[in-house]
Image 1 (cartoon, one colour):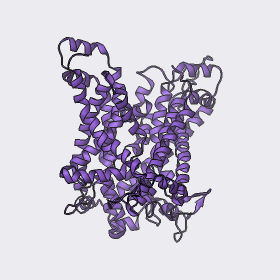
Image 2 (cartoon, rainbow over the protein chains, first blue to last red; image 1 turned 90 degrees about the horizontal axis):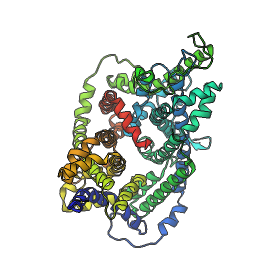
Image 3 (tube, rainbow over the protein chains, first blue to last red; image 1 turned 90 degrees about the vertical axis):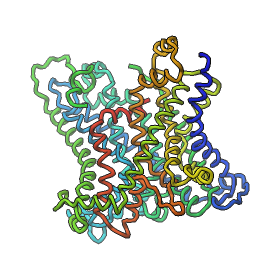
Image 4 (cartoon, rainbow over the protein chains, first blue to last red; image 1 turned 180 degrees about the vertical axis):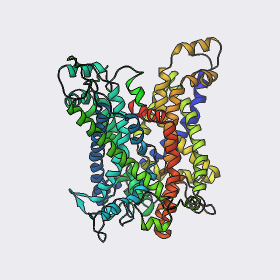
Length: 313
Length: 316
């Protein structure tokens, strides 16, 4: 370290750290503090109420709903996205016609990758507004329109999509319809990710498996999948965060942002409802802290479950 | 990522045809392989159609007039190209303003994020000082915490700041830019930190011996060497800030005497929510199309960099 490096370090750090402290760290710290008060947000009165907000949290019917809806997304979003992405990546990389009795990628795999990645570059808002039109509950909607035309759906009784609170397999239908969008939007990205990981597996491993007479499907389950374990577990963690962050879809697509009849409430929608509609900032902050703890525990858990010896090649 | 580079020009990998120990003279694929190949193409095509068809439907619907949207909602070919839909969305739907607002925020936001992010990452990665780890972990912590937790105090904080510095209050571009920068720093620092660590020491030492100052070394030696990383994280930030909707919805709210300065994502939400009253369907489709096509066009041109840039963040 030469003379003057201290001033240099400080000079380079002061702006980014200052901004970060002011706009990110300080609000988080304040939120934790407000969660112990009964502050209404627009009044100046705020009394310290201790853990009252947190006790209330456990009795809140909406929070309980939001919790189970988040669990639903946490299980289904990563599961469906990863299975579908792995399947497509597998077809893309080994589905080709072996001209010398071998394994090769399908023709046009580059083109497929470009197309599958489309939803990833579109904003969640564009996707949500687009799907709102696809999910329209009359003949103008893409899905209802087609189904009515071919006679599968009665024009007087079309599919209600995100306005449908009826349970399907024990989960409100609206959540399943939101899940479809999340999977539609996420699959392409993870397919490209898995595809790149598959291509970085050295060829000799596959040659050895083929020499031993393994079929393609066998090779996939016994060789490729175990070697992709690292990538898949990272994907699982990321998709977990996406599953917790379905708020854009709920906000834009469901009636009264969490409806119908609170069947699509998630933590973020309950938080916003309490903060800006009911004016209970203190309680809303407690919900936020609970969500943060939930997210951190989840990340720790996922990292713990998925951690394993890394295979170097 | 063309098919040519798939099979040649790189070390042999899974996509290539390995030789088998039983040398078969025939170049014909077996029946099983043909079926498998057909099956693969079928599934891949089905998914490709599922991705492209809704997008195409939106683009095509944006050329129809309102009565056609209602009467022939499913047809992919509009009877006439109604360009005025775009004009209407641009002026009456205020998409023109939204675009301009987004552009202002994006240029300022991404530039400052890259500059401040790589400055912090560089110092944290290559200088030892007291508190280094603390600051680094503080940035990392921002990756896991949900933004909604900070929403309420952030909103209050911005309102309070606004009463001292009007430009940093709600509904102001400089404020939104700084908030974007602060919230983008976590990932930018995390990503560039690992990048600066991998850069060789020898060049830095040589520059120091030649009497290069620390600041000059950063801008003229290190930053150019970190270009691949900067491109990746730049793409990531452009897309992330272009798509940001929660922060503007929270912070760009009407202040007395001033209309909302909305960005595109926020404006589209409003446009679609207000549809119930005005029902300008073709205008809405035109708005979505205009928000969608520029991004898709840029992506198609730079698809290799975009795919690499976005997946690099997860692959780390």
